[in-house]
Image (tube, rainbow, N blue to C red; front, side, top):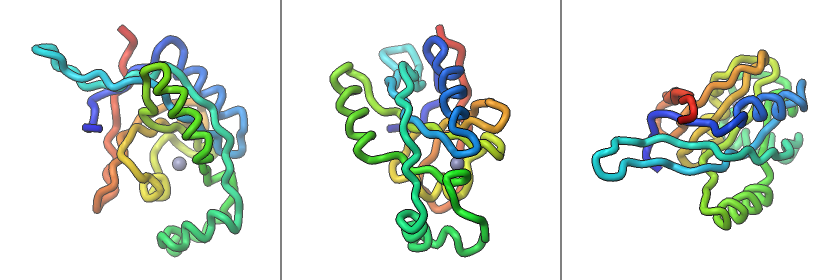
Length: 169
Ligand SMILES: [Zn+2]
């Protein structure tokens, strides 16, 4: 997927997302974003993501299981923080499969993921960046319920690109 210029939330999707993800506070909440990628057709220059629905997921992060994964990626070598679901999240891959199947059936796709930072702001962390496998949108809900959207791509440097949140047309 080519880096889009903005993201649009249908109906009350952003509000629903913010409420859903902060419901598990102080633990991080997570969800998948299901929608479509609107690209230019003919003269109409367009490259935006459209969120049609939110697929809430359980945060399945567990100590011992995912700590190891992180130490392999050298993520917790510099920062000595107490790892828990309050600062980590993992979406169950089986959940992703279900969501993907459902989306395909409805001619939609998973356009990205969302999670909350109940103790922080809506900026992606280095861990968020390093744990990204494929390029995609990442919506983060900060502690005040504010939502910001980012485009995360694996590259040498940590340069998340902020996506404009567009008003639905
Ligand atoms: Zn995060």
